[in-house]
Length: 241
Image 1 (cartoon, helix red, strand yellow):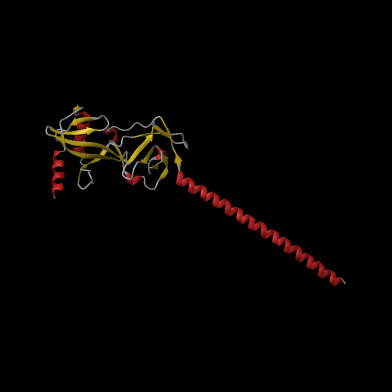
Image 2 (spheres, helix red, strand yellow):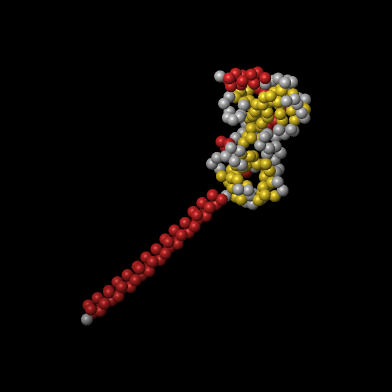
């Protein structure tokens, strides 16, 4: 009789243990499913955040980053041209539907890049930033080239003495609002270590009366005294080959 009671007791304990094991398994499965759901939600939120990014608010000619409350203004694309190789993998958000990128090496998102079209990108900067003059830009080299439809040939100027001479004319040369009929136009880009993410741009134009720099900031022509005519002649020779 004692043995029988003992067997019954063992059966009851085994059944109780099996029931507890089932409850534990259900709890574990529930916990795993809950963790999986949370992970899916987190990943989805992260992906959505990455795909949408910051949606800038437009107000009175500027854009506001709702994440930081910073206000951004557009730099003139004629004078300040972005080096596009700096932005491509740094998506940040959108301005009026256009993609916006941060620039590696520029701290605090003080400068951003807006993609207007497949070929046109515009620099934006915090409204507290004053855009540099050509002297403040501190150029270390200059390119002159024909840029339409593609850049096939260009001349480079890296010699400090030559650059100083060009900068002296840009800063001190005689400025004119109008000149004679333009027969040739060449693009100029200055490069700087101080502003390594962008170019400072001018045009070099030729008329029957001489050659001039066109300043996109002051909208004026500056007498060049023929300082780049030799480089222009070299470009013509290359184009003729």
